[in-house]
Image (cartoon, rainbow, N blue to C red):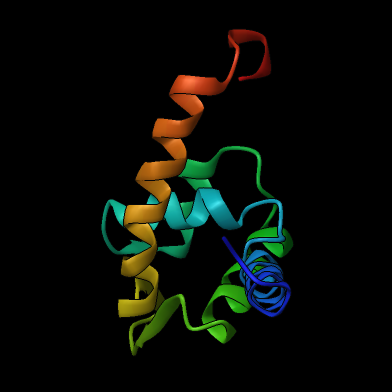
Length: 111
């Protein structure tokens, strides 16, 4: 069982983690990048109704959080490619666990 100190530390760490995923598109971007590297327009197309600003903000936030990397290619027009970092790849197991939990516990109406 957790002591009060352990519980407080755990709660604080969880809050910090949730800040990384606080954006509307964060989980979906990470899920897309789990599949492999993607260019900006590929992400935008694959995510559906995300607007350019929303996607740009999400990508910037995930990059600042160390979850994804951004590589710029000197082409005309400039090509930008996004990929998971080691930190982002480590999230994959958590993502799978969350999906398994959802399969087990989420009612069809909640999906």
